[in-house]
Length: 238
Image (cartoon, rainbow, N blue to C red; front, side, top):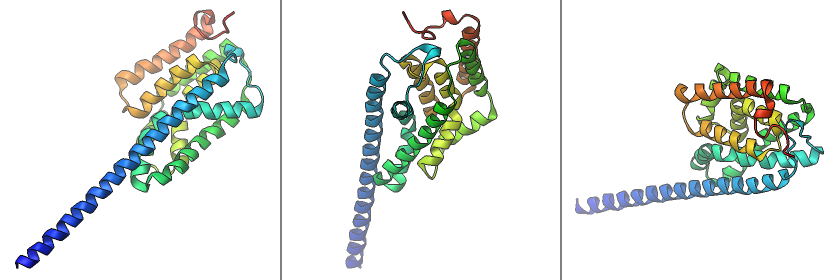
């Protein structure tokens, strides 16, 4: 009987030790994934700001060559979107290990890269009226069930970075098109949009916050249409 108890205790301790080791390994994987993701985002901010230096011409901004724009767009998306994707990255690291993180992040950024290709193909400098109209549309999109559906899915577990990227494009597309219309080369507008996107990725939807924000975006669009000179950053400083 005593021998049996000793064996049970030994196996119990072994199981606890293995469980503790797995927990420690998971914590380590998540820490490494988070550090890498945020480090990549920080480095991308540095690259993007340097590339955008002197290129901001407000609503008259031109995109330059395809290669240079895509390179800039990728660094911008990594800078803007990776911090908000951190919870999804942590879930992936916890479920599949840290080795699955690069593929997840790469697929996520690839989706946003495809959006950049579409932007380059369709973009034309249109002036303040078009920029204001896009901002109004972006604000109205915040109220739609489609926006709420995509935003909710961004908070849930997904199977791949590509799937997660599609949901996040659906959630943030209005804000991103507003950035493109106002000036895709503006560090100021890029920073403002990043804060909004990050808040929506990390925080649950709350009407007390979301409705005033959407109305503010609509108001900004109307102001751009009516009095563009009163909106800072809309035209290049002389």
